[in-house]
Length: 547
Ligand code: PEP
Ligand code: MG
Image (tube, rainbow, N blue to C red; front, side, top):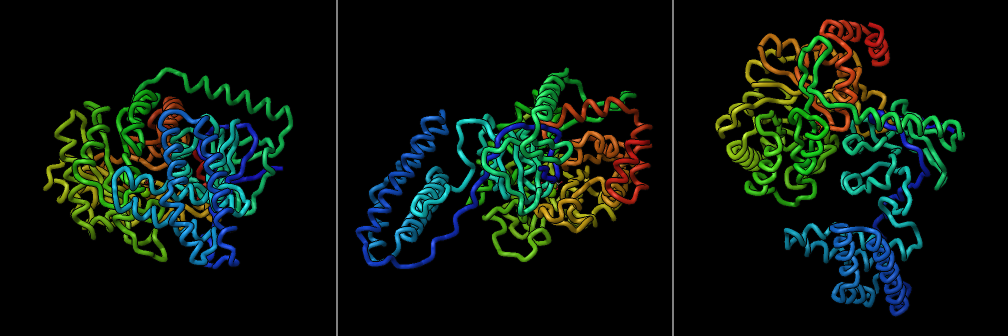
């Protein structure tokens, strides 16, 4: 049997499948049958079982991981928490509901304390889910824990799940939902986890069944033949050898320089990016630093993080994006209101303009980091629609002392008025993920429309050309920082359309570097022209390959 989806990257994985259980629904607000003592005893047994399970995990974890789990075990067995849950049961509440309410009450108290205690609140939520799962006799939600490596099948992953994946264990990821630019896909690419997303809501594979996950073709082969497994394993070895090839700066075959930059979400990833040959940073996603924050980060906290990042790149360009909150990356302290269509809502620069103090503090922190380091800091705004918004951001950034200020091209309207925008901004960086989502009107998080989320679509390529031409006319840089830059064949076409730099997850640098070196600028332009005149994404891909 085969499952088909959209591959992320070009990796391959072979291994047994484990399925991630769905989160448990909130227990109904109901009373128990009258025997409070029996209800309390059942909760006690469930708490002990959850603690024993965590203890076993702690024994296999190391360092910080073990400390976090041990802290969770202590919280699970906190006598005050037990008293609170028991009091609720004595008042008639069912055991499951009493655990839910009691833990929630303590979680809220931890959040109110702020700092380290607030960070532990999410762990308490995890413990409560484990106890409720024990009471119900169902599988514990979250990423499964296995002593042996496995391929994970999930509906989709929350950013926190993906961030916590144990890379020694998770060989590959298959998601039923999600498109190629959902944040699951982006993080999978960043961590070099072979992934196939959007395989369909009904996709199911029996636990432990061996699969081959081939991201380049987007195919999951279930229960493959021994011959197919041997061929896949050979390709895995070949890719490992290719990744070890010598590192040079990005350039075409005729010597035209195409700086290859890194997309990063944390200063902690900077050293690894430099090692993989990143010539700077083309997109630093600042919102990733604050996904769990309940209150706006302080100037000092931000300045420390930005300074840590910039210190890795003396004399190099580092493009930092102002907080891009909304839709796939909600930040509760910035835009928390419910919206019917969050992708079309108060997000990106729009949200920052409505909370100007947050924007002010972020740009002030960036100015501090700019002054404290030797890196060349460029700052840009996300989700910019037109020249008026460009003017606002560029003027505001310069008033606060930033040297180089630009905008992201993600909303198609910005490309349509590219000449006006490039007269104002120091540079433009094209976010092909959102540019594709909005050009094709297809939610990048939604598996059912994942096929539309294809940056090879000639409509997207034509917008890129409009921006590239406007950049060349104004003598200003136009880079690419969406996932499109990580597709080696498309990277060549983007350069042919006028992109001056390419920024991608560091794991993709080697493949793109190798492909660029095979074409001259004239050949890249010929491929771009061929792709532009196709009428479908698949047609553009074929036309570029044949040109
Ligand atoms: C994009 O939209 O292409 C982009 C780079 O930003 P993000 O993926 O973070 O929305
Ligand atoms: Mg975007």
